[in-house]
Image (cartoon, rainbow, N blue to C red; front, top):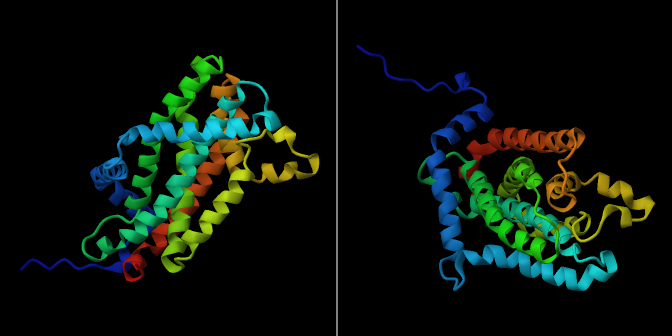
Length: 272
């Protein structure tokens, strides 16, 4: 007589590795969820997905009009702002969506099994798709500002990958906290506002007083934005040290977020 299969929790592997294996098995679900996120967001909109391009362009025009004489003065200031704004918009949206997707889609966890990381990974994938569309208005602004579109921009997938890794790590950390303390979603909105002005998006780092320069250097988004902006605004390939610092920040944040999230994932169905 064949023995019945027995589940032994003590023989379970590392939660982080099991979560990764399950995510790979459900990769099609991640793609379909990202597709649904885009369709639902723009389904009833007159301009549809064009808002992905018009939103950062409109924000850039407003910021350029208000701050160009204060922080810039040159026509290329709009390119400087937009290149940083694309990074920030991606980060802010994906980390916020990671929390909201897990909280509002949490009822699904009580009905069927899905890897918990699906919600955060699909939010990051959605953000990457939106970022690709946002490159169109960026190149339009570059043409009007007479900033050459250089071949160095071909290296943008690497900064985008580091940015996605960092956003996923932060999103997983925030999602884990938000499951236990729902107020984190509202508090994070306030934190994002402060974080935005502490990041070199509408101003250059060398414009800050020397006494406050250390604040920027403690900001991980400073290194990721600079890495993304260098091929666009400066027209150069970042040096190795810039890649290493940004990569280390992104990888360490992702590892910490993934391990912590995975270790708590089994408890989520009882919390949402």
